[in-house]
Amino acid sequence: MRSTVSKAVSAHKGDLVAKLRAAGLRPTRQRIALGKLLFADCDRHVTAECLHQDATRVGASLSLATVYNTLHQFTNAGLLRQVIVDGEKTYFDTNTGDHHHFYFEDRGLLADIPGDDVRIDGLPKPPAGTEIERVEVVVRLKSRD
Amino acid sequence: MRSTVSKAVSAHKGDLVAKLRAAGLRPTRQRIALGKLLFADCDRHVTAECLHQDATRVGASLSLATVYNTLHQFTNAGLLRQVIVDGEKTYFDTNTGDHHHFYFEDRGLLADIPGDDVRIDGLPKPPAGTEIERVEVVVRLKSRD
DNA sequence: TCAATATTTTAGAACGATTCTAAGGAGTTG
DNA sequence: CAACTCCTTAGAATCGTTCTAAAATATTGA
Image (cartoon, rainbow over all chains, first blue to last red; front, side, top):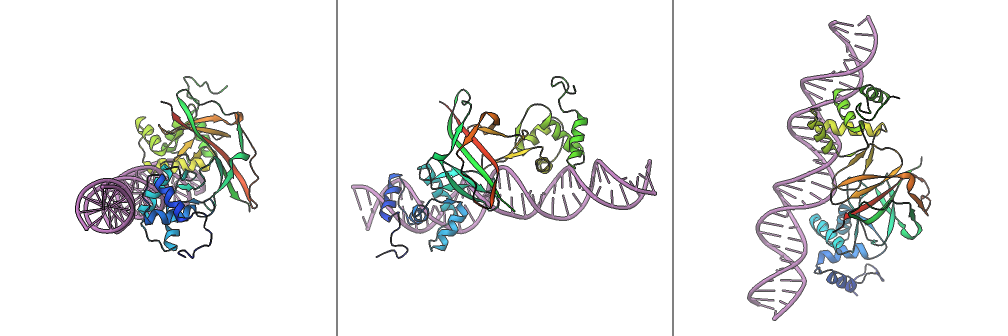
């Protein structure tokens, strides 16, 4: 038995390697470590900085530059999606499906709103020569005193 | 009838001074110059950098730091609204009413979508202890080839 | 009007997230 | 294993934005 970390991690190492290969990315130690953190359990919303901390905490030693590179490679491969809600930092969402977000401004945290529940009507058609790439809804929340 | 939008600029200097005073801001040369650029004609979506260029172009000489300060002061006073659609830079919108945006990703430009036309249904209620500050819809556009 | 006081402006330094560089390390293929 | 290509990395560089503290300007009251 190799990994004591969990009895049933949802992303087996084999799956992850296949996933990387399918994306044209070599399954390096660093990418596997990050992939495990990102795709093992439930959906996540991470920044480069916090993923780097996670990795360090788990004992994987890799540079911040690698985290940035990897997040972008994963995003280009369609494994992640970038979410912009805050001018300071960029978030990456492991949920690449159609959905929207709650943003907790106080704490700088994101949470998914399932896309099926939300309907948007009355959008004008896009200006000539352009087409819609995506419609993003962000519900900005503040904590109530 | 005070303002003929045409030859007379819609924001008379006097109005602007009153507006600044009402916001608790002294009507300095710099704030008046920026106020004229921002509130004179139609709604605008500016970045600090581009407003600074505008000001320079018009012959008002002020520092970039002042543009930043002023944009934030105007925002705090409710005269502007901040829009975040791009990790690189922050936009300020002279339309402070309820409305949404088209974002032209190629060109980095924003355009208003009147809020009345758009309806959003099926939003879950916010988590306990929080309340909605604002719901923002961004329609990301790409130019069609 | 002028002096006294409070606010603003500003140049330049500082900052923080992100990207770049170029050199060494690691995965792959035969 | 050799040869090749791709990846990682430390550190420098970038860029938008904020901070600093000193000089400039607006306001107030006499």
